[in-house]
Image (cartoon, rainbow, N blue to C red; front, side, top):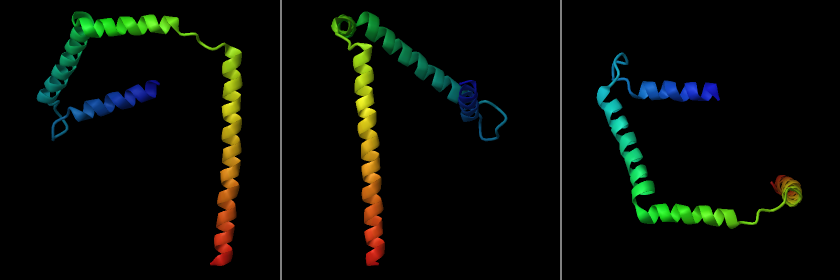
Length: 108
């Protein structure tokens, strides 16, 4: 994770360099900061000051509490079935592909 964040930070740093590669382009940094601040402001407005948006998220939270989640044994069983079907389909499609390739090689 640290390698990925370092990679991203380096590319963000390079994106803000000017054409010579020695100075940071302050206009690009300012534009990025203005964009982030406007997104944050829109989020604060949407979540806290807009009644429709805040009531939507309150309704989502109350509906999430009413959900009957499956038990762990049921989830494990369903996951096993999905894995078994995927393995079967993988083997079946491999055999069909291999068979059609063999038929094509016999014809040509």
